[in-house]
Image (cartoon, rainbow over all chains, first blue to last red; front, side):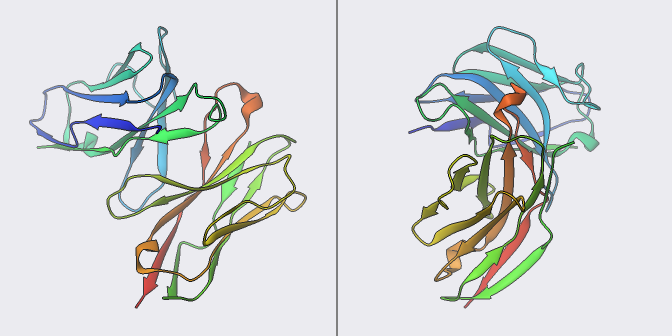
Length: 118
Length: 116
């Protein structure tokens, strides 16, 4: 149980285009989803927190107009990287906080999406 | 500010041996959660073990156990009978639920290599 999927797993795009990454909780409802960015051999850096039906809360230094987050349902959150540039190339990971009893304080992680911007 | 420190960037251990990864944190909270996550080369984050601060008993999951010292704000992970599949990055994470945001605070990670 508590499976989180991400799609796509890898994406390559041209500079200036937009890319959408989906994060789904497959077997539970997620009131809160988190989006992280991870550089090679580094820790996870929280970009934003999204709550179903409300606007995302972005961490300091994260451009909300570049990284659009939508949490339209209790099982789906999307991250859109707008007008992507090579410096946006990275590994993006989502996680979901579950509504299941006993899991209120634990995040379940997706497998990540590797974005390469040419 | 709440912080998590993993002072060992890299460690190695011989297969079948025991290794301990350190994690210290700083907080004024009395109730919180601590986690150890494993990130293998696939980069999927996998929960290894979880500890609730109000529980004095150290958590254990098969070969993985923690030494939770609340007064010292220390949360080390012991891996017994190390296996090649334990090779991964290990992250310590702190969660203060009273913040209302349920955001994790991650350490910088320890890269563990298990040697054959």
